[in-house]
Length: 153
Image 1: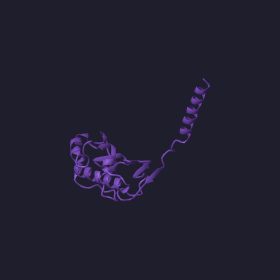
Image 2: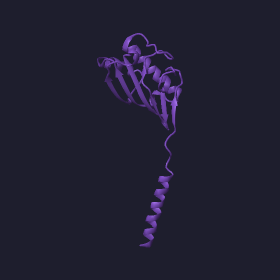
Image 3: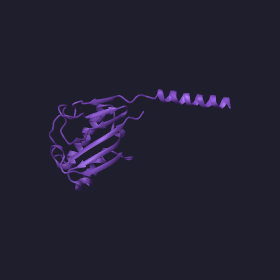
Image 4: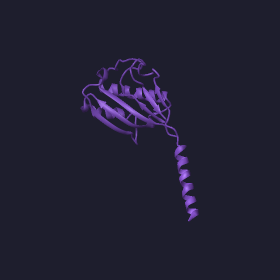
């Protein structure tokens, strides 16, 4: 009986030691390269927490400006996804690291058109995704996309 009490006590002490030595929360970095979004805007282009990168929404702007590319939802979607690709690569990630996208469309009727552009950037297995119609997007954009990426170890 005494031996089992010692065993239980040892297991409890080991569990407490493991809990006490658990990893500390990941460092958080607020990132602004200026390669896509002007650094004067009141948000970070991305935030890295450990191996996870949270990208701010991207619209179809010409890099370094707030000027939308001409050509409507197809051209803007292509540019927004190029901007996402650039932001990911700038911080050591790729499109294959994306696990979740949120898509905002000024007109949900353009969902199928957006999907055709999206499939040129992502392939199966696709990231998880949400899409919604909005009543207006920043700077009059037709589409905005935000992503979460996790670097594979």
